[in-house]
Image (cartoon, rainbow, N blue to C red; front, side, top):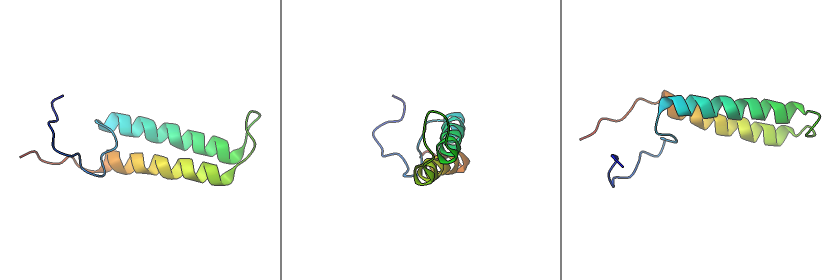
Amino acid sequence: MAEGNAPRPWWRMTASRFLGWAFAIFFAAAGIWIAAGSNLLPSNPLLGIAYLAFGNLFVMSALRPPTCRR
């Protein structure tokens, strides 16, 4: 509600850095689990790499400095 109507920067995927790191850890763990295979899922390296790439986007979002508001 406090953001206003201005568009968000293209690299911001979450509202806070904590959520960025939480999602990055989740997607990294899921990517490794899918790529390595388990009893529930067969091994799928390409899908695991896709999950790791998506997790990397959250890491980049969490590492970028916040923009200054005008």
